[in-house]
Length: 327
Length: 277
Image (cartoon, chains in turn brown, cyan):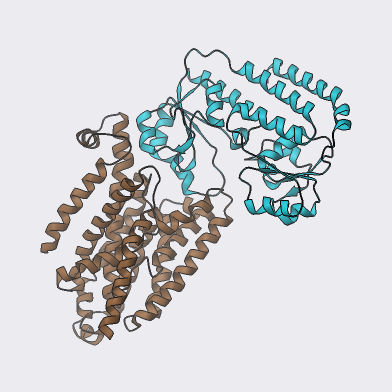
């Protein structure tokens, strides 16, 4: 086990316990854990098993997906600014989900919603990889990302504004900023299959990403099938981000900050960074979800607000460093 | 409707017929009234003399929000835009307290009289709003008749209650309303005790709803098209309360606006209370 995981895994467990103990119902820690494990039929069991447990599970799953796909995209594009939220992949996934919900496609079969989000994310990742592949450079990636984000955001707003439902337009904020409030076990089950598929694909790209640090020719010389690697990263990101966004909206910057903080801990190796970023992402999203509930207990402060407040200055610092490195 | 209420309505109508001509001659009532708010639409339709009200807003013909769709179909529809309303050359515009500031000030700048009517926050407010709009339209007698009828019907509905079952009002986004709101007063008049207590509207966390475990859950009726806000009403916790306890939907049109139609909501909820006792 990487030494950094020995710190991160206990941290995730601790944060998960704090998250389980936190809520307006005012249950004691012992009481809440007893209700969670032993069950029964009181309201405390309902609160623990149907409200708090799904929230913690979703924070774990989605945080891991964000950290993992951020690390994979950065490794594959060899660009530290790649992150599903910033470059529009999550935004496109949100558009897919909103379109499926408003057209009624989401009601046709159980996995229709995450599938539609996956399709949206896939279009965005394909566009990005085509426009700013490994040789595309930072500027192309960011500009393509801005265009895709803007387009996806505008289309999402359009669909929600045209909805016959008076509440839909107010939900633009949820889709743009993300939240885990009042999600249920249904949402966990909805996100789980594509999340696992995405993780599997991305984790298996580890060897390819390591080889890619030597350049494309050298990687091919080492027996890496670059086309296969590209599809692994593209499909893995689309599946993980699609599933995450379908149930929680767009949560930006986790995939940027986490791999960056942990890169030095794995000696800059993109393959080893994957699993570490997944655990780190889970820790960060759990912490953010605890923070939104502490800051504004009754107001459903959006997760993306917090991650952007932490992540955006970080992003600026990265740009600053890149500028200095070039000078 | 009870027999008493029917009788009081007829008496109210008779009073109105007898007194109306004298009143119209007395003041200088507006002749072209345009309403641009769902609640003033309905109050104006109840109060205005034939031909006095020339347009109501588009929401008045929306069956989920409006209790007077049939009546509203007889009027030209406006979309609460300043330009459109001004072109109708009204001598009085009825707007809600939350009507766009830009629209109201634009109409005033163009020299139109605008009466802003705050939403009703209680059953008593309904009487006040009837009286205010009645006065503005020069229809005081009609307003008095409607108020008397409203009082009489409410008195009948506020029957003796042996025990008030606990209830929670739970809308989209986990919004609830306490005793100091119109919906809260309707719930109280129907004989329930509201778990939200003596408060205005606010967010009721799902966890608190689960812990309070109310005997009855009063929800809104869902709108077409999907929304995440309404998805919370299908959350397993809400479902569990529905399954173990009882749940009753109240359509927005029955209590969104403070009009005498809220008595239908009181009546409906009182019947629901008797069912679960």
